[in-house]
Image (cartoon, rainbow, N blue to C red; front, side, top):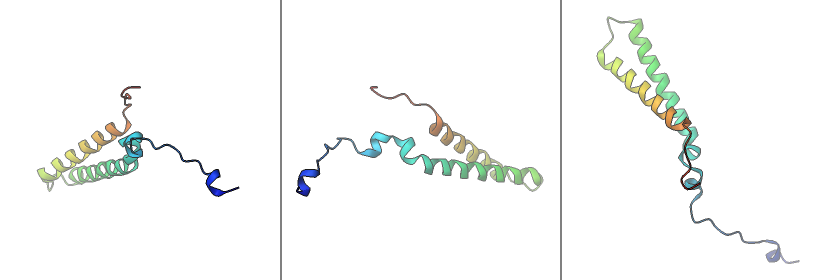
Length: 87
């Protein structure tokens, strides 16, 4: 037998694989790592402000709050159930 007869071409899907899989599956690992990094950074900054309350600056506490909030938002968008469009 010839090699050409054994290989069957498969039809290509019109949408790329990254779009069919969705953003959560495509970039889920990267977003999870980034959210965990923001959460740990915010907790570290907040813990430092609690250890030294007289030396704590308002900017450090604000940065900790923004970092923790950003981590929670990223985790929410990563873990929330999403309804399929047209399914």
